[in-house]
Image (cartoon, rainbow, N blue to C red; front, side, top):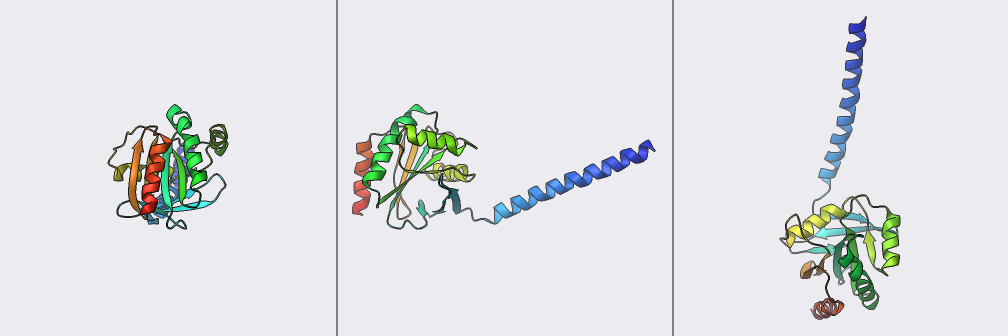
Length: 186
């Protein structure tokens, strides 16, 4: 009787775990079907941003002719905190010509914490908080040949799918604005 119970328990456990592994495999297969050249980000306002990788950079669907700047940061990083209001100023100044997207390196950060960061540091630009943030950050770093470990903040500016400039560490607002003006002339 004990052998039958143990055998039954073993078979039931095997079926249960097999079902879990099958579900994980289905999720992996679905993720593999999504193009590695496309990233779907979710903003704090629950809107989707579709970022497409080009040969030399990135474009954001629906933002043709805009300069796209990715700000890779962390909420706990003092230089990231210091640059946020400057990026907010640039976003306001060039609102129709510039799209700044904040990408945190922090995994599974609550939206409330990002909202608090935005408010506290006057970061009036778009923040994405989704599972694909990390994949996009990795792609940006790879294209810039920065390796797996790079300092933050890290910003990358693109125009028409081409890299304009990238920055490592806190950068003066005037330098970024100069590069924005240069890119707008092209």
